[in-house]
Length: 461
Ligand SMILES: [Zn+2]
Image (cartoon, rainbow, N blue to C red; front, side):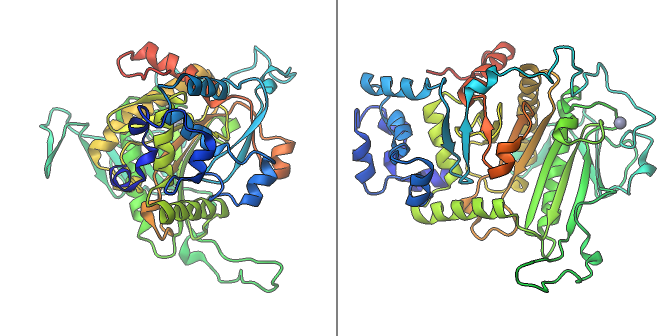
């Protein structure tokens, strides 16, 4: 976030504010020029009033927290704010504009369908090995389309790679744009794609009625097979496999970004049937499409609006606020941070991103991806330990090819266990209900992270 932090209004720095501006009231901040008014300028006044009648000042509470760490009155306010665990409330994700209802009491409800003896959604394997019936295992290459990318571990005794000014001491990997013997990670076109290849577009889907819009959707749908050996969770493998998987993400996003007409690229993982997986072998997917989904467009526009108004990336501002607030942070390295976002749509959601401003995941270096792989492996291990046997998803957000202002964007990777099912209310209005507060989830994850690596885990207030 270096470039943004230099341009942003100085009054939003927790470090700068902690020793001054003590005890400033909510109304004082509302009137100051140059301060980011994170709620009403991104939501219309009408939207905010409709969702939260009579409560226009919430936006200033977080800022007040960051500014007033040394002030006892404000500390009480902060504690009251953070400690509001018992009653339902809504929080807004400023990136997407989505409101989520937090209803901690719902965790206490009985569940006839959840037996203590119910089998785990995600099986725990002891040692990955080839499964002769699995189309993703080594030896079954003929059961999938031909690979478009593959990687295998090279000679690990070779000297570090000199790459310009940097020296990469991570795993030696041999990457080819196609098949190779002895592969460890392999990318193949999906046999059952969600989108048609460009050459298959017929042009038959054209608007014939203004009330029934229709159009072709073209692009690519690929499967990233994360090991030649059979296991359901990527945490069963060595972190080197995670590194090669991230290399695959980066290289295939780069490929699709250059294909004309592609506006959006989604990279995601479904692990376990409740998360949408149909095959057990650990894998991720990439869908590149001419369609710019409405939700993505909305987020992009909000980020661009914020950047135009403040000169800052909205995601970076939110991260700075999370770093100042601390209660939802889990862990960080020199380059990356993991936290449970303030307005998480799903219980237990962990967001990973880089500390430095970086819109494009596909511009990450080998060194950065090696570090990220180790961090991601740890994050997934925390999720597995905190919610044993639960299915999970992860979603990689990177600046879409169709974005006009890339600097407004920030890449992130969201990991979340599937703790509850989307039910009637959520389907009726697209407003999620989350019964696990992100502060509680972060506390749980921090305890696990601290147990495994006490040196690196942040202390919180
Ligand atoms: Zn397999």
